[in-house]
Image (tube, rainbow over all chains, first blue to last red; front, side):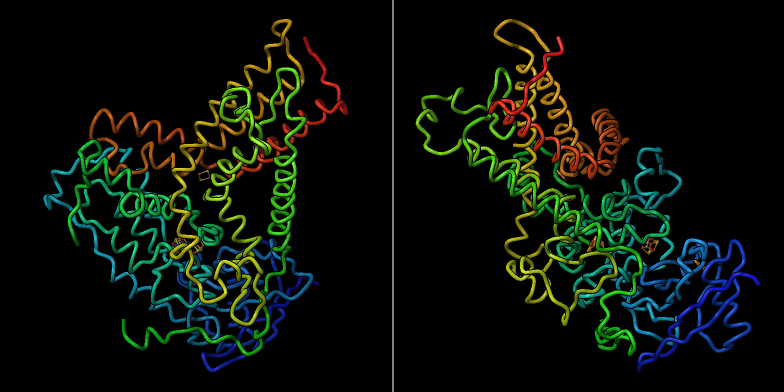
Length: 254
Length: 274
Ligand code: SF4
Ligand code: SF4
Ligand code: FES
Ligand code: FES
């Protein structure tokens, strides 16, 4: 007999629900999304699962597998302890629509608050980029908006600070704009106040779950925290800028 | 933001209520180890700092007692009634306590904020006493309120820590200069490794990374920013290993003190290699 694995899949809606057990035959190379497709195809046609690419590139299939936030299409079954049942749940920080599908629209609302890229010079043909300027922000462009980092971040997940904190995904976007050599908008007041960077206590869960391996904490959040210190907490930087030893920030209000 | 979005809380799953996590791996090992190692280091360092004896032997000086205040400034510290280490240790202590890496480590292990990823210590679950002490029980404020807002001063702790590297470097060189000339003892090597590890830890700091080049938006813009970009790029390689350097230097600095202490109290014999 071929190998089998038991999945405890959450079924239900925002009103409540429960786990339902499914036994799925396991083949080499299978990922959790394959198992959910098997459930949909043969055992429970109305199981709701969101997915698109099955290649870890669209960010649709985020879930919590054995309690760990991850992409279902990137979590291989051979990496799971299938001697015991594997739990599959929707991401916890967002409201459930049905079964494994959640409503992540809060994230899009947060995104709208961020002033988009604003160059000085709109004439794109005159722009000259050098590799060293691109390298740093390129990492942030890898984001596939799976919102796993938003899901795992304890500020959002456990402390219900959604209104005050934009979350790691948008810290990544803010860093990509803030560090962009062509951008001219000063987003530091926003980063400190509305985006709530001080609420992040750099405990790095966002970095641990990011399927694109973006070093969210080390490369986006901590550098932004240091910029906030320059602007708001370090009297020496303020003084040196005031007397012209350090250059003033060449940025305008959003 | 619209009201409906404000109200978008996630309702706990019926059958998941009362669970703090569905993780099946040993997520508690890392915070527990951190608790044990950091806790033991804290206790040992406090004990060693309060001794005020056995911190010197031959050309060796325990890093907990460096700079040697009594020898360098006898007019000020000659009659200091307590152990000189209590004047020295606050500097490295504040440096480590405000370090971005250690913050992660102790927020997780001492404050359970959070203890591990997707382990949900929320309203109903017990909080660590330390978290309550720092007002984290009343509603989460992260690093926006006193006392944790002081973490923003980390760069100042870095400036002092950088100064200490030079002092410890001097001690390490001195550890080869005996009354009968140049010799290498095991202790000389212990103190050299100590300053090397502490140097790697200190100069892989995130605040230093920012100062070197992280604060610049346009690296290519002029000669100076190009040079700083190179420095930032190199330092970033060290920065990736900051956690490893943090632990290695912590353990080794404690070992260096133990080494000098045991040699000086006659328990261990210092071998002279040549
Ligand atoms: S490092 Fe900050 S943003 Fe990332 S998960 Fe932790 S608290 Fe949230
Ligand atoms: S930063 Fe990483 S974890 Fe967060 S949304 Fe983007 S890809 Fe997903
Ligand atoms: S289906 Fe596209 S990321 Fe998983
Ligand atoms: S970040 Fe760890 S020492 Fe500065």
